[in-house]
Length: 267
Image 1 (cartoon, rainbow, N blue to C red):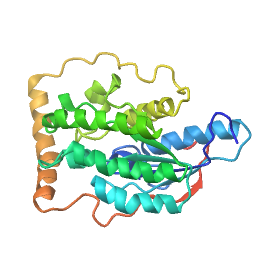
Image 2 (cartoon, rainbow, N blue to C red; image 1 turned 180 degrees about the horizontal axis):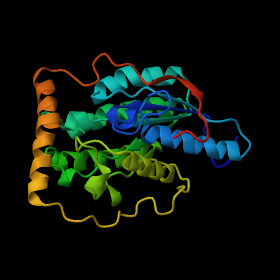
Image 3 (tube, rainbow, N blue to C red; image 1 turned 45 degrees about the horizontal axis):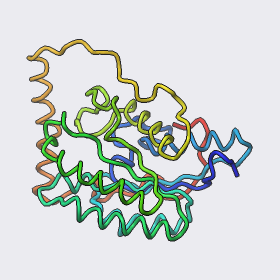
Image 4 (cartoon, rainbow, N blue to C red; image 1 turned 45 degrees about the vertical axis):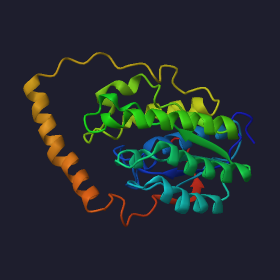
């Protein structure tokens, strides 16, 4: 067993963030995402130390609320007998008017306790700071409370936390995809580096959170056209699904339901 990477089987559970929405697809057509990138990085370090590659599964499905993640995905993850689980959820709940960060914290903590009772290391994540997001700026107070609860849960139960809220680089709109609530490939890559740090490991890139070089100012007319496209292609469809009580993840299956060795060069 590698002294640096003690984990041999990693399972990710959660929503679109952990599924990897808006990242590039791999050779099999599956979105990559920060959890895949993290798994590849951990696997590379294990192989370099002379150990077997990391085994990895991803049960996350876009659109999932926290309770279904805990009720459906966490038991499925336990059945796979991992020694590391990333459990990230609650963002979709907080987008809803009745999203209560204190209630969500109770649901999350019960799941963390269940995983830790089995001797599994748990990786949590704060939410990102939505102060620059037109559609989600109003959720900032709730996200801040939920983040505080996440840090407290981690302290009480010995979990790790990816500090997304504190990432300077994610303030740049170029890190965000067309829908403005999911990350680009560059954003996912940087979160994977933050996850290594959260696990007590050195990042692969020491400049992982450096801001991008300043971009030229966007003319007001061009920004207005982009806002109109975003409203038509993303905001309105999202609101329509909410009204119809539907999810973008309805009838979707996990992209990597069973643990399999990760190629050290996979990303």
